[in-house]
Each structure stands twice: as structure tokens, then as C-alpha cells.
Length: 123
Image (cartoon, rainbow, N blue to C red; front, side, top):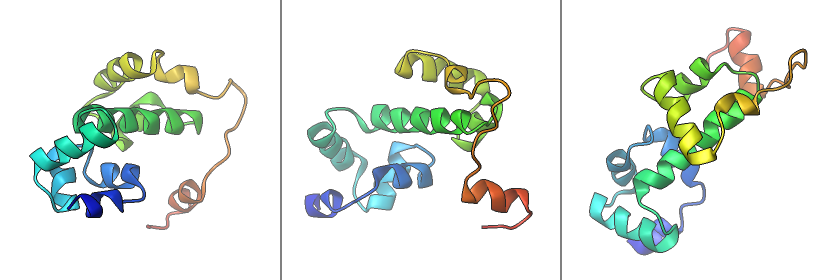
């Protein structure tokens, strides 16, 4: 089973698919939660919950840097509410999400996903 987990290339994609919940991530990986916890301790030196929260906060930072509001970034990254998002983000990243926001008057570059959603296409 360790070989299966070692072959996973992009943990952040799986983390997002799991809704940043360790138990769901274990199911997606086809292992028990206990096994996933041991694997994360060995590979990342953190619990799955802690590492998933870091990836979740990184996504919030990226979204805010692209021009999302904190409220929209919190919803997109599966936080229960914007206040919880800001508190966890500050605890992990050391600053509020808005420190990643583009300066006033600067229009952030839109991604392929943003353009298609804005034009009414579903992906």
C-alpha cells in the first residue's frame, strides 16, 4: 500500500477532491485513516489534518491573489465560513488572506477556468 501512496503525484488535487477531510482522503487513496496518518507522519512530518489545512490555506491565498474576495475564496476552498477561513489562514500563513490581494486598481490575470465560468460554460 505504501507504494500506491508514494505514486500519488499531486496530493493537492486529491485534497481538494476530498473536501480537505482526512477520512475522505483515505477513502480516495484506498487505505484506512490510520494508515494514511502513519504515511503522512513519515512523508510530511505532519498529521493529514494539518497538512490538508495548509493546502487549503494555500488555495485561499492563490484565489485571493487572483482577485477573489475572502468570502468567495473561503467558499471555493470548502471552509465552513469566511471568519473561520481568515482565522485558520492567519494561524498557518502568519497574515490575513487580504495581504495576498492585488493592489487596488490592478486587474489580476484571469485563468482558463475563470474565463469559461464567466462566459457561462460548465466544466
